[in-house]
Length: 87
Image 1: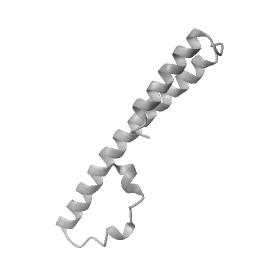
Image 2: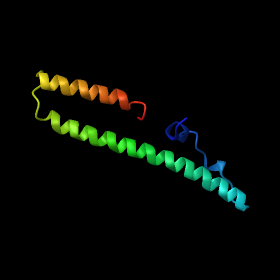
Image 3: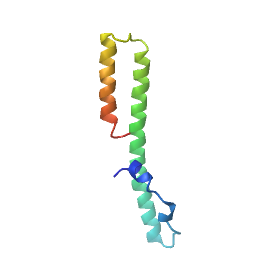
């Protein structure tokens, strides 16, 4: 499961006051594992956003119904489908 899927299950009650070095290390390891996944997701989302901003700018110069418009539409749809698992 992903961080996004688990977010709805997050509960602050999962973590209690730290009373030992071992417990502190477990919390630190949990945080680091989740943070790496968060950073990976964040990087993927930023890339997708850049692509869609670029697509948006390119669409402005196209005539609806033209061959170039249809090609751009097909590329955009394929991109959305490819990235839908991230979103």
